Amino acid sequence: MKVTDDYKAKTRLWAEHPKVVAPTPGPPLPRFKAMKFRTHMEMNHWKAALLREIADDRARHG
Amino acid sequence: MDELLNQLSASGIRYLLIGGQAMRLMGMPRYSMDWDLFIPPKDGENFAKLNALLEEDLEAPLVPLGPRGENFIQTYQTRWGVLQFHLGLPGVRNFDAAEGRAVVRLNENEIPVKCLCGSDLLAAKKAANRPQDQADIEFLMELERLGKLPR
Image 1: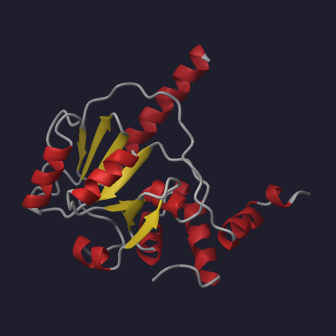
Image 2 (image 1 turned 135 degrees about the horizontal axis):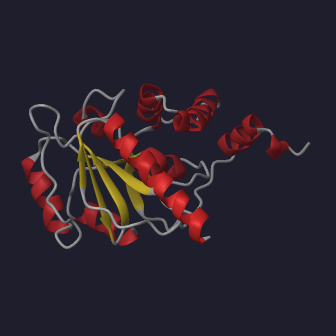
């Protein structure tokens, strides 16, 4: 088994040798309007729906 | 994003990087689709500076926290990516105290970024305790075990 197959081992390696890596570019996002939320729960629901939309779109169009 | 980070510092804007990008700057290889910034909830001068700086990017101005918790999180799609402004943070009592413990970290291009300190980040992640926070919590607790968690 490679050490990286073990998530806890991977976490240990990252913590022992922390290194800042450049952010990975994500998929293009659909346009959305500015949003305001009262709670993190509201925001998390909205974000989950947005991620589902992106995933569905990727599944449909590759 | 580097340009914006430089402008935030140059404008003296009060902010703390939190969330996935803050985890990344602590050395955890991690993807995040947005930039989460903790800002003071009622600092009018800070809101004015932010709105002036981001005038071309925000379709509606950033506004202070409302009396019933309105505007607690404000999310914008900008040329810099998705920016989320948090006017409060579970597990962290208030912005001013967190700002006093803030840590400046360098990003991959050596740009200084004011970040929530490691122990506050851990407290916030534990308070949120969502499924997606668990890996971050494990990483931060491992840093703590190794004595590498700043404050």
